[in-house]
Amino acid sequence: MSLGELAAAAGLRVLAAGRWPESAADTEVPALPGFMASSFSPLAAEAARRCLDAQPSGPGAGPPVTAVVVASALGDLAGAVRVARAVDGGERLGPLLFFQAVPNAVAGHLAARRNLTGPVVCVGDARSGVEVAEALLADGDAGLALLVLVEQSAVPGGTDRAAAVLLAPGAAR
Image 1: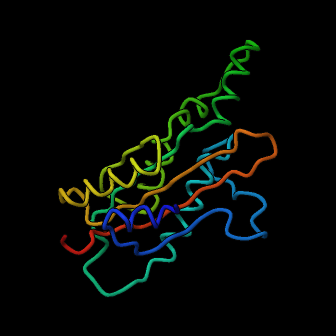
Image 2 (image 1 turned 60 degrees about the vertical axis):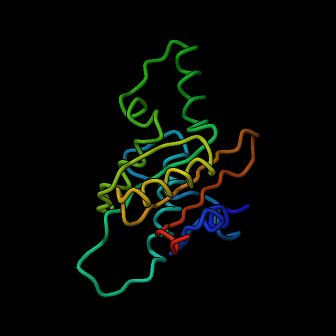
C-alpha cells in the first residue's frame, strides 16, 4: 500500500504527493548542502520538495501550521555503516556526520527551509507516520502534515526510495 493510500485509509486528505525516483531519469539524488556520505537526507528533501511544489496554491492569509513527520524503518542506513566503518578503522569523524546521524536533522532542515512551523516527529514506519500525522491534525497541533517516508536499500546496488505526502484532516467521521 502506498503512503497516500495508507493516509486515505486513515481518513486523511492527500493534498499533494512526491517521490524519488519518479522516472528512469531519476538516477542520482540531488545533493543537499550540509549533508554528506549518505543519500538519506537528500532523498527526504527531494521527495518533500516535489510534494510541496505540487501543492495547489490558492489565496489565503499564509501557510497553515505544518508538521513534519519523517518515517523510516532503518533510519540512515548508509550513514550508520559509514560511521561504523570509521569507528572500526580508528578514523576521526567530522561534526557534520554527528549532525546528520539522526533522522530529525533532515526534518529540521525541511522545516527551516520551507517555513514549516509545526511539530517535527520521526518514527519507524509508514503506519506510525500516518498515525502521528492523524493525531497532530486531530489535536489541532498542525493544520497540515508533511509525511516523508525514506528507505535506503540494504542490498548493494539496490534502489533508495522516498515518498512524501502533504496531509490535511479528512471529513468528520
